[in-house]
Amino acid sequence: MQFLTHPFEPFFDENSKILILGSFPSIKSREENFYYQHSKNRFWKIFELLFDCKLQTIYDQKLFLKTHHIALWDVIASCKIKNSDDKTISYAKANDINVILNKAKIEKIFVLGKIASKYFVKFYPDVKFFELPSSSPANMSYSLEDLVQKYSIIKEN
Image (cartoon, rainbow, N blue to C red; front, side, top):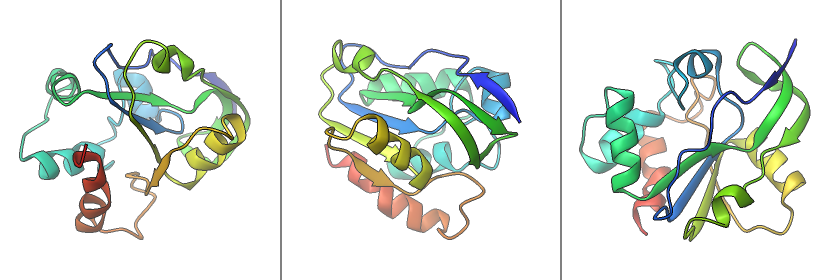
């Protein structure tokens, strides 16, 4: 297990209204320097289906996020983790979400997956959030259609 520090900045601007938080970037996301880049992660596919668009490049993804006022980051700033397996996370330290909350007009916070939610509650016990199922390929208890249905709450803003 390696001790790693989150390698990239939160993605947001002052117009962001929705904050989506994962746990910690996968190996592939760390290599690509942006969120949810593993080809089997269903995150971008969910948003393609929800918003009827194509998000094939990181540029497309960033433009989509800005257009829909969505901020992305992760709950964990540094931790020990084996490969990309959230279940192996230990010695986690929090990202300071106030970096975003103090500059953007965040109305709702969504945390993806049980492990990210566990750490979010630990680090921010008084902050209201909505837990959504992880889009990770490790979470096969949800079909893509189930995930799209669950994530549709994001579009209700």
